[in-house]
Length: 452
Image (cartoon, rainbow, N blue to C red; front, side, top):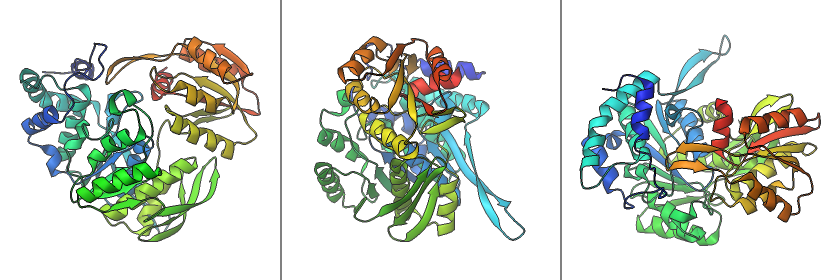
């Protein structure tokens, strides 16, 4: 019997691999299917929207949850977490409150599972985990256990909707045991190539694995070769695919340091929408989210407007201080860095960037750095080591990143500070009135700084 939160976390961490092989066991869903069957297949009681893609899937899933929460009780399962594992299992709901003597609105509550509930859930799932471990299928992974916990919790909480973010890929991801009402693929780019494939087409086929019969498909993919794959798989599953720019879309109106304004067109048209997220990429995510709602469940225009204006996402162009201006963004691949750089140039064209950077080993550091050299005045290279789903994860040695910056022709000032907290302190010591501090390169770096 597990009695404390620390013991619960320790139990889960036993299932994080310690070997160099980060994805142990045979690829497939057989083990996850066995685990959830032992729990009574809680996922089958949930009405779900499944969200995958290379970039933007966490943001899109969160926006969908906020929209649905204006009318429904919603379970939101995302990964990874920044500080506490509880962040992966959320309930999003709303209550009415009086805005004025004649007007009421719904205020959205966005809460992680409580420590006490987390302990209960680990005790509840423990026997099924141990039984799976003793079977011929072997021990379930950390991510599989947490995903099963989320399904079980949402069933017990009697949520109206579950919004489930894919962990990695799609076809063999632990979340892919659900039968969603809507399958969302935000976009496809090169990431996790060691597992998913070396080309965007190979990765697209893996991600298209979340497309299911009787589930509408909503996607923001742009590459013609990828669109063909999504349409081909949708046709095989006998479902209609909704493409950004074809069946639905947006017109960007304005982006400020408070948020983004846009018009939406789809089954219905909504003008003058506002979301307190920064960058055109977030408008794209919001547009995709609205279409998913149109496909999955009816919401009134006022509910969509109310849900959008209350969206909050940590670590995505998140302004944590305004004097000096400090921005945290977990961009960890070239596509995300490209969107980040574009947003900074749009919103703060006169600002010079003091960059605090660490990049996870295995990522395309060269392409990321090529984009970051264009906006950086001072670069502070740092590092991290953290225990994550696939085991112990390290960032690149800052010396390696230093060489890449020089190779890309960067002529600004660079410093190496291995301690992330000290690197951030150096940034605050160096910042001027015309500068901003940007911490990016990895969600794990953000999590480390949030805890410090």
